[in-house]
Image 1 (cartoon, rainbow, N blue to C red):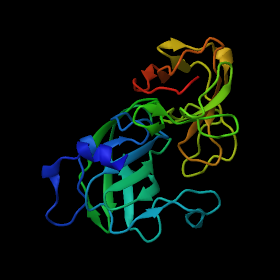
Image 2 (cartoon, rainbow, N blue to C red):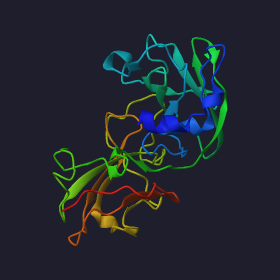
Image 3 (cartoon, one colour):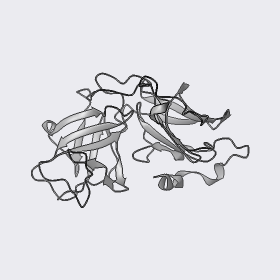
Image 4 (cartoon, rainbow, N blue to C red):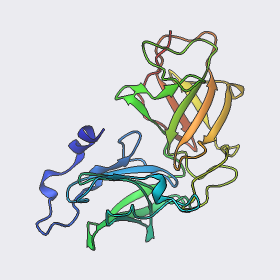
Length: 257
């Protein structure tokens, strides 16, 4: 994903003083690589001089199930609307963070700071939701069978099967709502009335076919959708999520038999 999104980075925006350097085009939704953001969404910043080390969130960084605002030993933090965001991954060219869930839709800003050197404060727009399916490759949804084995062309989804989809960007629209800095430890379904849908080739599946849609316990910013596929399932349909008048990007398919 990094190589793909680095194409968004403006080669002329480098910093002469070693400060973090990135652009509005290189800040993206971590699942879709699109400029689509919402509270409680995983976001990736691509750039240069973002860090001197590579580090990923680990159990050692957690205290009482609380997410850190800096991964120890990195010196990297990200400020969203004046608040420190939770850090997930850090490297010299890529940083992943979780937008705090307390914000509402509207203008916002994001700024990365590394060892006291601040990158630009970049304006972004938050929507109530910015649905995006994680992908196994640029055109294939990351989806699993009920036993969590991967769905792919060698092990496609079957008509009538219950599968699991993985997403970010469904916002803070859950019951109970997400708690800032806290890893969710239990299921929290999406609130009713948000218009959540799973679309196959642009057509919404019946609401009764969505067995669960909400946070994935144990993972910040990650959502899971357990959905039963129709008996008349077509081959390799386009799959999208819709919520709060937002639809995930087109062009992503679900491998089916």
